Length: 410
Image 1 (tube, rainbow, N blue to C red):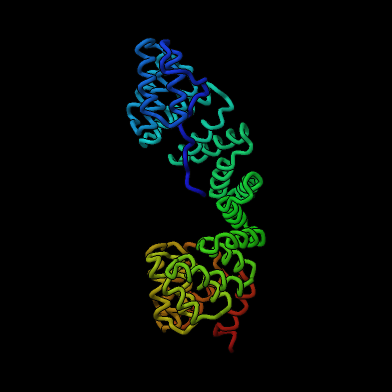
Image 2 (cartoon, rainbow, N blue to C red; image 1 turned 135 degrees about the vertical axis):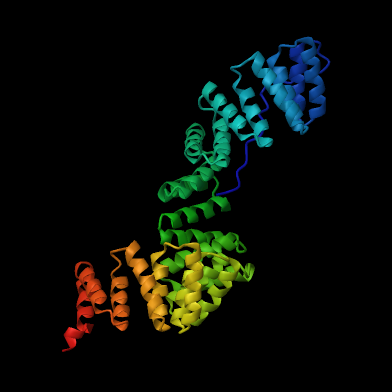
């Protein structure tokens, strides 16, 4: 998802006037004119003059706040906006500008309250709903942010920023198809928007639409060839499609740009593993394990690659490091049990495999290998118990095990 940005302070559309005018309204109009010209210091002077003549002129207090915000005097601007609302509580634009100023100071709760009030007073206030979506996202209130962006888009259907931000939130919420639809709409508005194009590719990946994701990522790297994340996304899509040569090319391009990128290294190692090019998988995954220290998924993949290259000691160490991070992962513990058997450490293997079947009683391969380890230790009753479990889980494995029991060889 692209970086979030608030829409700017609102400059009300009032007719320009002459500063020489003696009435408060004329001075206020002159102040607004100067704000639009970026002459904020002169605007402050005009608004203060208007307020001296007519202290309760709400539009002048609002303008004073806008001008002060333009000068970076945000606290003073907030004071002016609150005075505006004291005079006119139903002034939606004052609530909106108060929200922008509060957000600038990181006062997100106050900002959200102000934007929500602006929308309540003025339904269809698209820019206020857009900013409310930005603030709710920063607060971690994702459901409310999605609702705010939807309202903003309903009021202003071609708001590309709102569409892209909505797409990002929907994708993270697991609604990949809806996210892709939002990004497609954003691209219909701004066809050359690379960020929206990347977001579309990402959303299609989240939805498992790998062929479409690959096409979208390919279009991104055509116009942004140095975008590492797009090359990685292209590699992942190609790998999931079984286009391993394309995946290797994409991950390699990413690593040329950023040699130690952990995602690219993991992707490269995974694709080598899919091709059963195990030494190359080890080389990539060892680097990934350094770049992403303590990542259980990387360590699990590295353990498998070590095991496939007849390096059981290194495999066992990688699996143990992975389990230190993710102790309940059955696949890692099962594979640790297998390499311990290869190392002749049968008692340890039995302990690990027992933990697997305790946590995952329907893990048929764990029951089968546990039975073999028990047989190696001379525990025939224990092996028969595992066979009984296999009878219900996997009759084929149960038959294979039965053939290895002593009575089958008589």
